[in-house]
Length: 388
Image 1: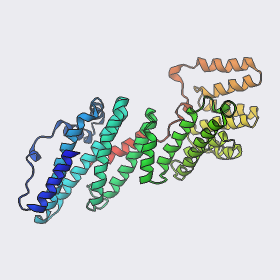
Image 2: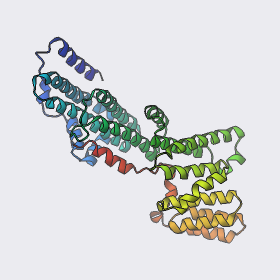
Image 3: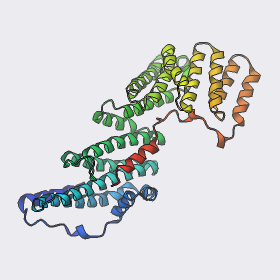
Image 4: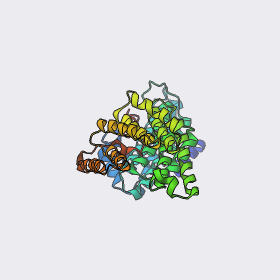
């Protein structure tokens, strides 16, 4: 950020040493650069075309243009702040300040969306540019003039909500893309800023669940085929996930998902009674069908652990009735038949599974290892926050 730092430093020095001769820089009246036009295109609502163009371009190409636009807008805001004492209204200053903030908020989201669409090796660089924008937003937020909530200007409250929702959006994006290497650091950093935040805790819990799942070939046999220290590590990951989900359950909009996940983890930790206590209300309530489906599958697993195969089969059949094109209940029923020595039944269930057309399979179990938070709805909300 050398160019930006120099520009702002010069502006501040000019205010201090020559306050009567400040003039807008020459580039103030120049046509907007290609990069600025790209950000404006995004601000106008042409999201797909702007994000596609950004995602096709290495993030390093945008670094210098980003700094130049930022330096100019920041200089102009400082200039208007200096000149406001000569005017009967601070409107020009507020306009310049708002223009700068909206550019930063739009650039931050543009590069975040580009990161989720760009090649994997460009995901980090685009996010780094987005974080640079956010760091500058944080600096401006502290000094922002207070505006009423009804104001057309960006207010401290709107910026605070935008910053929180943005970090949650990044965490969800990591999960959706299955790029998990940088997720722990992102969550650790943001949980320092937002301690025990339910949405971030949910993302952390799902991450630990995924890591526990990846650490063993078959979780049902973890205690039988792995050394005790490996099992201890697996249990530790599940216990961490459980603690995170308990915090996430405090949020009403995340409570159902958190309790579902807590039920599954407790069953894996052999706390079957509490697992049932968490899962059975989800089956009996008016929750979305995919939540009922998952709860039924998990209750079937608990039944198997309790050596009640008939109850397990009933739960699997109920799950299949909710999503007839799903595979998980068919495989579970085949496994139950095989355990009973019913080879014909086991084969029949498997054949039904294989007969499902790949294009018509609908199995919510396939999305279990990512948070259920609607990332599209969150993106829509973030985009709305940048519109004036």
